[in-house]
Length: 370
Ligand SMILES: *Cc1c(COP(=O)(O)O)cnc(C)c1O
Image 1 (tube, helix red, strand yellow):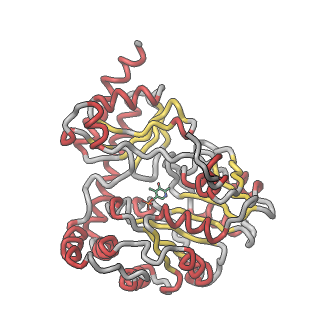
Image 2 (cartoon, rainbow, N blue to C red):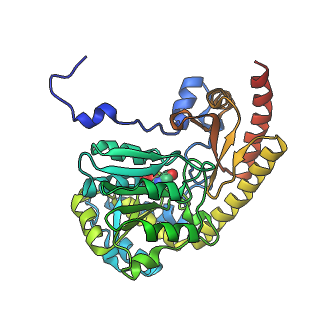
C-alpha cells in the first residue's frame, strides 16, 4: 500500500540497522524457555548492571512522574571531575547512538560527504544517509580501518570522518600513536567522530581527552557510552566530549529531555562503582582469552579483539547463527556487513563461554557435512 503523502526521500536509500535478537522473541519463535537462552549478540555486560546502579534506580523510581533534568547537571559535573574536563565540553544522548545522530543534525547537509571504513559500525552509514549525505566507504585493511586510505579519501566536501576505537563489529584496535597521527592530519574543516564505546575494556586505553581539555582540537568529538562496560544498555545514556562551541551545537539540536532521570541516576552510581568496572574488565579479558584459545584449537580464523566480543570465521554465518539459536545461544550473523562466513560473539560469563564453545564444536562439524 502506498501512502498518500510523500516521505522524506532519505528513507529510500536508508540502510537498516539489524539488532541482536531479543531473548523473548527467540523463545517465542522456537518454543524455548527464555531462562535457558543466553544472548551473546549485542555486546552487553554479562554481569548485569552494577548493584549500585540498580539501587540508585530503585531510589529514583518514586520521582519518575517528574521530568528529568534536561541538562543532567549532577551527572555532567561528576564526569567533569572524573575526566578533568570543563562541563561545557560534555553533552548527553539517549545512548551514544543518539549522539551520532545529533552530530548529523548539527553538521550534515544534503550532498556532504562522510568518510568511514568498510566494516565500520552500522550506524555511521545510516546517519549519513538520514541527512542525504554521501557515504565514502574506504576498504578495510586486515579488517581494521586503513587510516592512510581514509586520509586520502577526505575532500573539501568531507564534513565528517567516523572512526570507532576499538571498532565494532571487528574488535580491531588503533594505537594511540596511529590515531594521534591521523587526528593531526585530518583537515580542520572535517569533524572527527571518535567513537569509544569499548574503550574501558582496555587496561591502558589511548587518551585523546587532553586534545579537547587543552583546546587543541575543535574538530574532534569523542563519544562514550554507559551501555557496554557499565551495563546500562537498557536505560539508554551516553555522552560526548568536544569543544564548547560544538557541544553547544549538540545541545541545540537535542530534544530538551533526551535522557531519562533513571538513566542519569544509574549512570551517576555506575561511575562510582570502580569495583564493578574492574571485575567486568577482568572477566572480559579472561573470557576473550578463553574464546580465542578455543578458536585456535578448533583451527578457526578470528580477528584478535580489543573489545568484549570477537569476530570468528565459522563459514556460513547464517546457518551457524540458526543452529546456535536452536541451542538457545543468540550470536550475531553479519550478512549486513558482507561478512557472510563470520559471526560476532559477545564475551559472556565463563559458563556462557563454555556453553557456546561446546555448542560450536557440535554444530560446526554437522554443518560442514551437510
Ligand atoms: C554499542 C555501540 C555504541 C553504543 O550505543 P548506545 O547507543 O550508547 O547503546 C556506540 N558505538 C559503537 C561502535 C557500538 O558498538
